Length: 105
Image 1 (tube, rainbow, N blue to C red):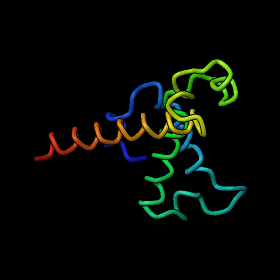
Image 2 (cartoon, rainbow, N blue to C red; image 1 turned 90 degrees about the horizontal axis):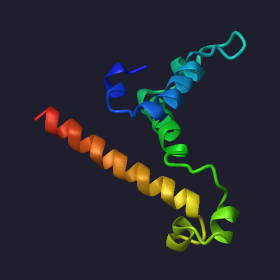
Image 3 (cartoon, one colour; image 1 turned 180 degrees about the vertical axis):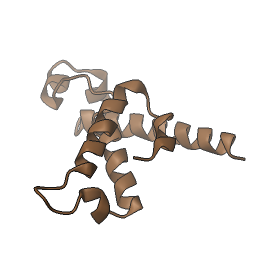
């Protein structure tokens, strides 16, 4: 796993990334480990997907958010959880990229 990205990941997301590393190391019942079959771009995409998948999740379904008229539902009635995940993850990505640019200029 790329140790350089770890300092950018909040502690509550680290478990998902660590689990992704377990998946990448898995030899798939004696076959070639997944990490050896993926390009570096595919590996990074997998890690980012794990981080973004449930970021900010309240543990509530879209139906619950609709019935309670939660702010996520009011912001996006079609897909309240998914829109919130996308919004939060986009904000995190922009923050992380600005931190990387700040530190490496």
